[in-house]
Length: 487
Image (cartoon, rainbow, N blue to C red; front, side, top):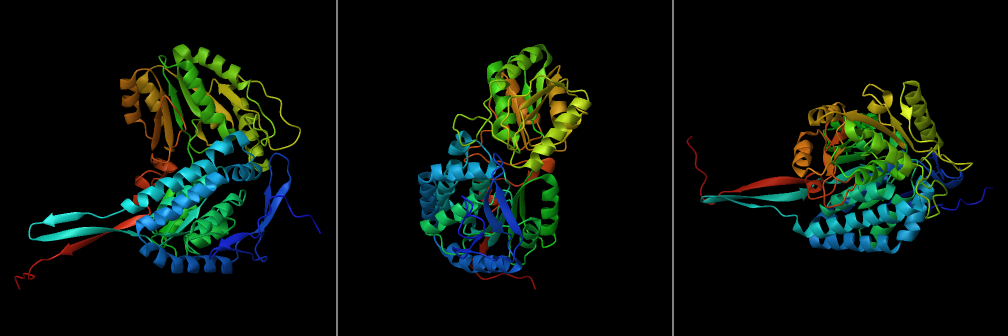
């Protein structure tokens, strides 16, 4: 009999406020991508687990939705405090599950999830309707929960994404059934633990593990009222189509091929920082990454030289070492996909300006790479890679920069670096992207709505805008006199 893996949870799922197991489900292994070690063994949800999770959510939602917003907010804020108190433990678990360096997870994962719980916990008491005077008569609106929401997470920010979906859903009075990625199943269970400990009634937030079939079963379930997905465009098409068959509202936070525009008057050091963080943070596994870097021709050579110098200093290594700046890909499969894109870029004529870095002997590592002489037709300039691969292109003037930036079916994010703030705002207004930054990149405070346009999705997460996607408005007309009639 094999030894218990080091990160093994009590069971695979949390349903009705308690851990549940069904060994008949397909096996799921969580593998540490830095070592190849299996750190946890779980099971995909069987139909019985799915049915129980939805049934419990429906039962719990009725009472949860009838609580005052202030009462729901207190639960979310207590859960935020619990996550912050356990940040080290959660960060180490997230690092083992995803391969992201501990230097990142300590500040960007459970910590940002706690910020989200706290923010929406504070908003919960403010979710009111409005009074509409109509002469003698009047009307009012009620903001009501949708019911049972399903959240489907991605593997790059497991606990953060779980919080981004759960916090607004629960603040509005909904219940949620959350399915993590099968590659990173562990920390969502810890969120469920924290919510139960904070006082969330059993069933208000459940976690069920599974592959695509479980996500499809949840998206089409008659007891589910809304679906929110973070994932790839192909997955988004499938989930949206499945939900549309039942006319369920959906939020889709999908992939991107986002542009960063660097004008010749920009602070090149700051722009290089934005491009490096927007391509190599989390080993490039961020949907909003600015993987097409457009640089005005007069400063392109200087910018490339600075990128090469700084990329050469990136510390690659054991993600559990806080000095490490770049860890492995989430899996060997993802590593193979990224290396195939690198090989294709070289075959299509892109010029590598960064030499390969020294990598550990084992693990799913990829050396960060900057490609120059990239043209818009090249594969690396068109397709989402989800790895540490930066494409640098050039432009002559503002109009060309905007045209090149918008020449993509994606529209998740964009960045502009310039010291001419009038131009910055003018360019941002013309960019086809749902989230933009000026002289910064990939900063996503919970107060700011996040989401895309075109094939990068629809709906918004975070900010007050998220409330619109987890609640519905009921209008009530109040007649103050006898009803008149002409017949």
